Image (tube, one colour):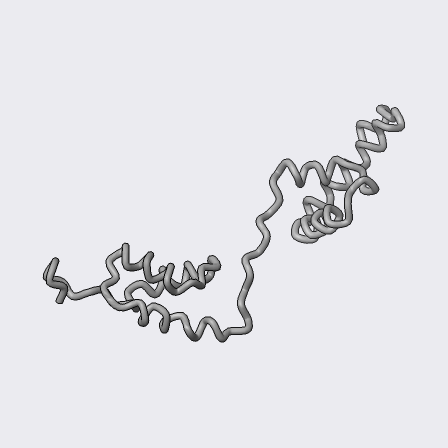
Length: 128
């Protein structure tokens, strides 16, 4: 029992979800994790916190966080600019967007057709 509150100290397993979440966010410093859960009410020793994620350290299939999706502004720019003005990574991102959604492929085709019509002053094709 904890002499200050009359309650038993919280065990490291009670913070399992929090520890896993922080580990997956990239925090692998056991001392820092210990300090964080200690502030949340953990009453055990730091050695227990160091031992808890040990199996995670030996994993070779660590999943890195994926890149955030592009902003609407950035994606719109890829659609509105001519394909020859896009850098290689921008072209790759645009291809990934189009592969993920067939409607975006149709949008790209419509935007390009409209751009060509405007460049060629072909307003008579607007109905199409």
